[in-house]
Picture 1: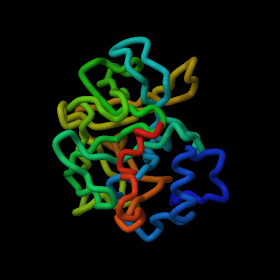
Picture 2 (picture 1 turned 45 degrees about the horizontal axis):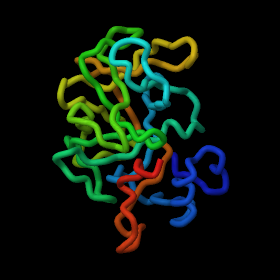
Picture 3 (picture 1 turned 90 degrees about the horizontal axis):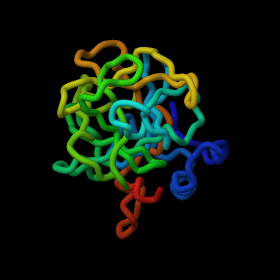
Length: 226
């Protein structure tokens, strides 16, 4: 599952992440069985087999903010998200993300946070999910609670993300967009948990505290580099 290999990922991995991968080795974090703060990952919706994705394309309705979709393509750098703490709760690089912990997911290539609010989504009229903010800083509507079965978020486990301010769950139910993002699935939030709201950590760079020497830059804020 999903550890990046420097030998095969040069055309699909953002330049800065490729640099990290090659500095710390092609099997960065392979022994970790859990997701850690500061990691940069792709998230797969288990039911619909699409990865959480964003890009600099705005919704034509609702909030008009940057759209968030699901894509079937595996090798797309626009599907990388950085796992970060919230405005009120630090998430120290390399520490396991706990079940019930509040986090932010920052889109690496645009620096905007996974976000939701009471606007209607364009296809299903569920709760819109967007990407919001600048350089990783938005507002309290960027906060999501990780719901999982044990004490920490395990990489092989399907988990849910509950939007803390509205109690809605990050979901995909299969609606497809036309142009200009033809075939991409709508991502939205729904009031109740279901099979449509299960997500699994896939490809990525999983950080450990020992992987960055003391005095080096803190890559838990990777979004600031893009």
